[in-house]
Image (cartoon, rainbow, N blue to C red):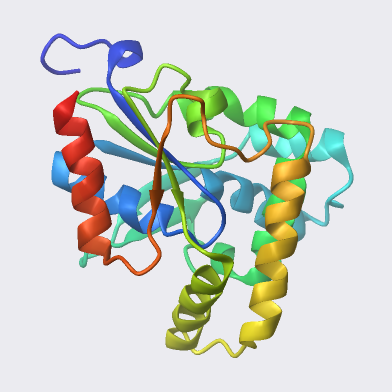
Length: 229
C-alpha cells in the first residue's frame, strides 16, 4: 500500500462496453498513464473457457466450470513493449485466449451465475493503491459499483467488426468481415439479454462513442474526466 490508502478504498476507473469497442486498449493506456493496476476481466472468462477446453470440461457443466473459475492460477504482466501478457499455470496463453472460439466460450461461461460468483472475489482482489483500471462488461454495474469513474465505451457494430478484422489480419488469422459482423451482433444480443449482470451502462456512467476517434483521443478523454473528479 502507499499513501495510506487501503486496498478497499483505492480509486477505480471502470470501463465497460461491448466486444470490439476498444475498452481493453483504452484501459491499458489509462492504467499506464496513471501508474495504476489493470484488470482485464474479460480475460478471466476467456481463461475459464480455455481451461475448460484443455481439461475436457463441457461449457454447460456449471459445477465443474465454477470449480475451475475458483481455482484459476492466473498472472498478468507486460512484455518489453508494454503489451499485456497472461499466464495460466505458468503457460503464456496471451495468444490462445484471443481466438474467436475462446471468445465465444467466454461469452457462454460468463452467463453462468456460479462462474461469475467464483470470479468476483478474484476480480475485487485486483483493487489496490494507488488505483485500479478495470475493463469488462459489468465492472461499473456489479463488481465495482463505487468506482470513482464509470465509462461505457461503445462504437458502431460496423466499426467494431472492422477493427477486429484488422487486428486478426495483423496476427495472420484469416476470417471474413461478414462473419465477424454476425458474431459481434450475436454476442451483443447474448450479453444484453442474459439474466445475470446483463451488458448495459451503469446509471451514473459516462457514455463514450469511440467511432472515428483515435486511441489517443479516447484515452485523453477518460483521463480528463478522471482529473475533473
